[in-house]
Image 1 (tube, rainbow, N blue to C red):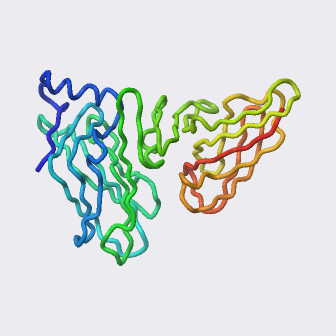
Image 2: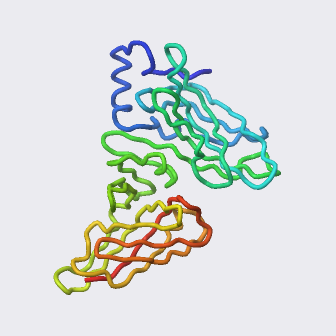
Image 3: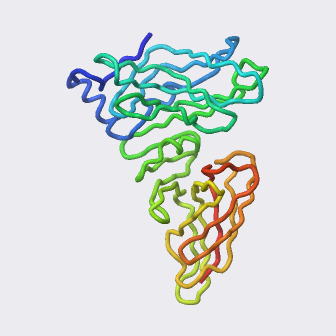
Length: 289
């Protein structure tokens, strides 16, 4: 079977338009129904995964497949590897443009591979899942669902890793009952902020104020992170406690040491198993006045 697509070269009739616009107009990427295009292992088939039938959209194109699709990943000789399973849209060939299931070979790091194609109008990969392969085993040792759903002004996803490709200013994504918003932070740097858990106690001149919030921080090449408070302390920041969010980042512990503070924010240095340029989730607890 092959995907049937609406939105490549050619005309769109009124029935297709009625189906297309509510979906592709609601978000950059999306999946139609809960079970659509879900990635699963294929028992008895080495290094193979299956992508369920269903409908998805991305960058103005809606695609529907009526049968399961399978794809085989590359062998692994040592350690572990995380591969991306994606829908690849290709606008370059003849009218109609093919959409197909694709694999993007990754590394031992649990991230969307940098080799993912991100050039709408040319070729673009819509993430469906990260699949972990382990040397000596032929079945996936883990599958992380990266699909997202959108409609009537809201978006939901299953795993925080989906935020790494949904990072568009103004985005609002609910994951496991928690809403994340992609907003402008310090020095106009964008980042994800968890909504509904911001705590600020105290106000007024010389009155103690407590602030607590979980934020997404991208480290510099020197492992330095910067956090901007939604509202500055009126006078000064007195004490700071930083904690890494385990649910979003996995089991590895990082040391976070505040290196500089101010009324409007702070910076810290990350130590331990962390890489230059890595994005982590941090909860800060600060006292000031």
